[in-house]
Image (cartoon, one colour):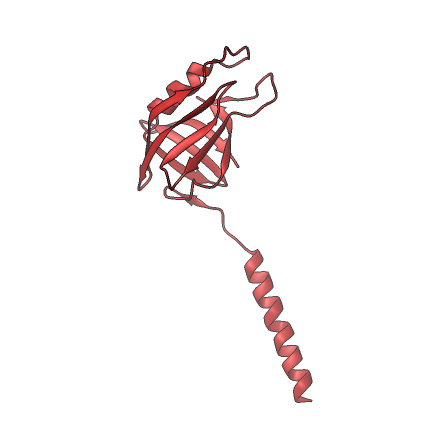
Length: 140
């Protein structure tokens, strides 16, 4: 009899822990983890981004080296970043120099990176901001 009660209790405990582990909240923070994710550009300056090539524009953060990297319209790029309490800035941005022929001007993307002064993560999206305005939205 006691054995059955212990199994019932353990089974009930398992289901409670399992169900509570599945419930979550939307992440909305200015200090969320941006490292370890390859972010893909969804919108730039309020306009949806879809390259004719079908390839994504990406951004990755290396927290150990405080570096960024990714692929812009057609060139690989790299640089440095500093973040603190929702503030974010990029510096020393460089790239390869291939000529791009797509529907987005690559210099618009690099200009946006230079104007960034903050970020927030909401609903799994990384929003880069400048002067209080959303400049770019990235998805995981």
